[in-house]
Each structure stands twice: as C-alpha cells, then as structure tokens.
Length: 478
Length: 94
Image 1 (cartoon, rainbow over the protein chains, first blue to last red):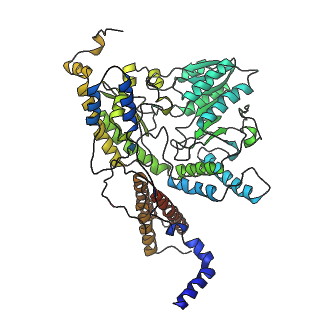
Image 2 (cartoon, rainbow over the protein chains, first blue to last red; image 1 turned 90 degrees about the vertical axis):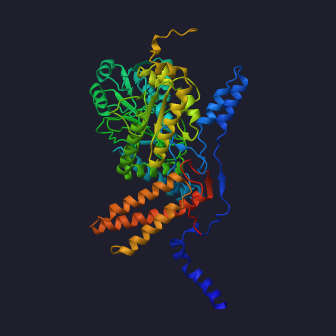
Image 3 (cartoon, rainbow over the protein chains, first blue to last red; image 1 turned 60 degrees about the vertical axis):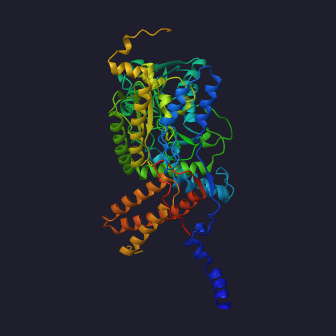
C-alpha cells in the first residue's frame, strides 16, 4: 500500500511532463453534468396561434391540417434536419478545437508587439491569413479581416467608389445580388453616384454583352456575386473578369457562398476585390475577410477609422479566436475540397431528382451553371410558407435569411422573371459537408407527402386537376 | 519514425472510430465515421514512406481532436435528430 503510494507520487513527479503530452486532459471530465438544450418546436406554432387569435377569421381547418402534416414520429428525436446551409453552416468540431485555446490561454492582443502574448496570437493570425489566401491563390498581404461579408461588401463598394469619386461616378451591379450589395449601392446613389442594376436572364445569368455595353469611362466598379445565395447560380467569373480588365474597371465579387465551395483563382479570374464569409464555410460567425488586389493596386477609403490595423483599411483589434477558426475552416475547405464536392454533388443530385419527381415542380436558376449545394425548387399550387410551417422537422427557408421575416416573395426569383405565385411557392435546400444520405431520403419522403397533402386542401389544385387553366380565371376583388 | 505496422494502423483506426462514435451530434458523428473510413481506405494504397508517415501523423492529430471534441459534444447536448432512433445507445467514454 505504502509502496504503491510512494510510487504513484514519484511517477507523477517524474513523468508529469511526458504524461501531460500523452494523456488528454479530457480523460477525466465529469460527464454527469452535461448541459442539455432542447429543441424549440413550439415557437412557430405559438406565433401562429397568436396571429390567429388576433385575426378576426378563425381558421380552424388550418390548425388541424398543420397537426396532421406535422409528422409525429415516435421513437425518433425531435431536432429538425438542417438543410439551410446558405444561411449558415454548423461550426466544424475541428474549427472549434482550434478556437478553444484562444478562450482559455491565448488571450493576447495580436497587435501588441512588445510581449509574447501578442506575438503568439499574431503568429496564429498570420497563419490563418495564409490559409485563407491559399484557397483563392492570393497573396497573404491581400487579405483584410472584417466582421463578415456584409462589412466586406460595404467596405469594397463604398471604399472604392469614394476613393475614386473625383474622376468616376458609376457603379454596376446586378438585380440578384445580396441585400447588402444592393443597399450599399443604393446608399452610394445618395452620394451622387449613378448605379446600374443589370438584369439577369431566366436562368439567373448576367448577359456579358449587356455588361460590356453598360461599362462607361466613368465606371469605377462592377460588383457581381460568384454564387447566388438563393438559387445557387454561378456567374461566369472568368469572362466577367476579362471584360473588366479590358475596360479597366475594378471587379468586385461577393464570394460569401462561393469561397471554398467552387474553385476560385483571383488571378486567373481577374478579381480585384472579393468578399468572404467565415460562417458559410463551417467557421465561426461574426468573421469575414476582404480580398484586395495589390498588383495592380486597388485603393479604397476605409469605412472605419481608428488605430490603423489591417494596413489602415479596417481598424479595430482582431479577434484571434475567430480569425484562427476562420483560418482552420479555410484550411479544411481546401483539404476536404474533393471529398466534400463529391459528397455534396451526390446528395444534391439525389435530392433534386427526388423532388422534381413530384408533379408540377421546377428547379429555379440555371441547371448547368450552379453550385450543387444550393437547390431552389418551386412547388406550384403550394404556398411556400405554409409548406415550411408543415415541415417543422426540416430546417429550410424560402429564401435569404435576411428577408425571411417579411412575407414578400423573393426579389431574386422576380428578377428571373418568375411570377408572384411561383416565387411564393419556392423553397431553398442547402446541402453541406455534414448532411447525410439518410437525411436526404427523409426529406424527399416528407416533402412528397406534405406537398400532396397541402395540394389536396387547395381549391386551386382541384381546378388544375379538372384541367382548368388558372390564368383564364378572372378573380374578383383584384 | 519507421512506417507504422499493420496492427498500429488498425489500432489507430479503431480508436478513431470509437471516438467518432462518441459524438452526441448526429451529423458530426456520421461525418467523422465517413471520413475515417474513406481516408484510411485511401491511405492503404500509399507506398511512399514519407506520405505514409504524413498520413499517420495527420491521423494521430485528428484522433486528438476527436477525443477532445467528442467529450465536449457530450457535455453540451441537444435533442436527438428526427432521423435518429431514440433507443440507440451511444457509446460514452468512461
């Protein structure tokens, strides 16, 4: 007894260093005190009930319809399948693993260069910057960290426009851009800029000839997104880049949905500025970057003034944890590119085929020029929001998260020339790295069943079944 | 380090599978199981000693990540997914 006691003490002393390396500190954590978070399945239901209580019309059948449509699958969990990868992605455990040490010990300010606390975090920040630059074949000095793609888009559009405002006053963008680009461009209108919003064809693609014709001598920047957030359409980046280079205007692209998911080479595609978001590539939220070309140099006026961090373009102390998480996420996107692409493509094809097998459904956007991880499908004669209400076991969205609060149909689908009814009945499915085949099977089955169920309730569907052309009906009250 | 023996590789593979199974989150668990299977299958064709050692070291580092993260996943838990049977018992490390 005594002997073993002394021995253990001794060994603890003698081998503590070795043990510290080999043994994981997690081996003895208390697993009996987990923090449980339950899924909120009631929120939407409650909101709906509140709305119903306030409205004068009592919609009794609707409630029962929802109850029926919401599949009670006993013996299974309650947490919905996540298929809204364009809104955000789950944080990869490997990213979290990189980030945790910044919350436990590496708390130095990366801009403090007088002590080791600053040096160690600064080193990590620069490593992350390198990983982020590598993914788009950029130089490490060309990456500026921001708080997200919205800030990057604003910094790029407003910054470049303001810097060159003495000689140039024209901005070109498209109608299908993300809200933050459209709003930033609109804000520049108030500063005396002329903004052209290019139309897209029914496939969601920009007409290159029209773009070339729209560029004037006083055009300073063209902003066209790489992958659309709602319909997943990929614009011809290389061709647009070539036009912009020929016409000597800056080419900015919102790459939030494209970065790491489709091959991008800023030199080959002649991209001058590119907005990047961390939380779309399984990184932490609240983090983004802006790629700014150095040769030939793109100059911009910073929208944030301060201590001159990030080459004076974006002042403010960096969050090393977020930066490192972002860097790790970018590293993983590069490392897993082939495996992820193949997986997403396979599942996306399965999903698309499964859903298009339902009658009166259509895929929105170009079937060829698309990122497979974003599938936008219209279910005719079904109201999109009611389908979403009936699909509480699948986390989906009818469009961008920024506009999901309003019940207005998507402006992107409008730009494609879809009518209100079809825009209202469309749903976006996002497939990602962590989506499984089992989930896709479940989704196809659930959607098929519930679309059928909701159509059975719809008088429109009855008319369609009877062969009445809906466009021939004259609706009263309009 | 010389090339890892067959039994060493198998043992590492087993440990990775065991720890990947420890994830409470359905999606993460399935992803890491899928990844372990494909990456070990791909690595089995490796001939170059440098590449073998690189794959070995990466896998060992990943095991570390999985050990830490699966435990964290068990500490902050959420309800089970709709495709996940409730009675299925998940391995919890002792």
